[in-house]
Image 1 (cartoon, helix red, strand yellow):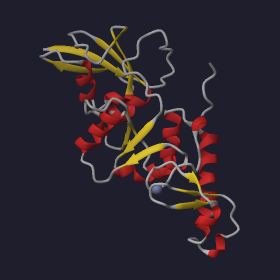
Image 2 (cartoon, protein in one colour; image 1 turned 90 degrees about the vertical axis):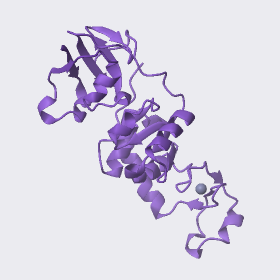
Image 3 (cartoon, helix red, strand yellow; image 1 turned 180 degrees about the vertical axis):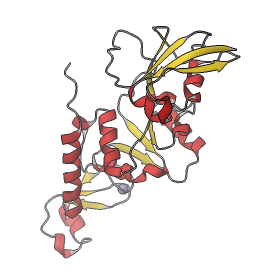
Length: 252
Ligand SMILES: [Zn+2]
């Protein structure tokens, strides 16, 4: 029987049982397998991992674990300076687009309020979600860590919080999005980019109490009309709170 020792750093410990956190863990095996599979056998999805060191040297997910190996597994944004070594995730996505699964549906609406492309499909099976992610190059946001272990999922994030506002803050922090919010530019219902509406054209379809509003936006896809009402105030407050609590972008 062969044995390798693993250590998981920082928030990767969220996936481990209490008694295993922050400790060196020994994995016994008879057949050497890729480090991706061994890491996931601890319950840690590969999408959460940014760097793997085997005996102090960076390796990629296909690296086969050998008897006596010491493996260090780091999450994204671990404070260790890893700029000089190769990260193992595929190249970063240029414009972030998200796909959310059912238990984080409310988060999809909040991401849309902030202007981010957030697809949400409560009909799709796990296999369909994984294939949409692969096909469209989206980042999968989920509470289901096993969904993130699918090979088709290159980019994903396991949402820790169960509270939607905290979830939004988490995602903005994780992907450093505080500076790229475009509030109220996307349809909350269908994710389409809104257009500025012709005031006269929309007014006749709206209740009289909002006649005094100046700015209207319309969804070219589902024809919903948006204006600066009480919902707008609440959401503005939420986005201000997120911005204030997300860390400042790193200084280059
Ligand atoms: Zn729409």
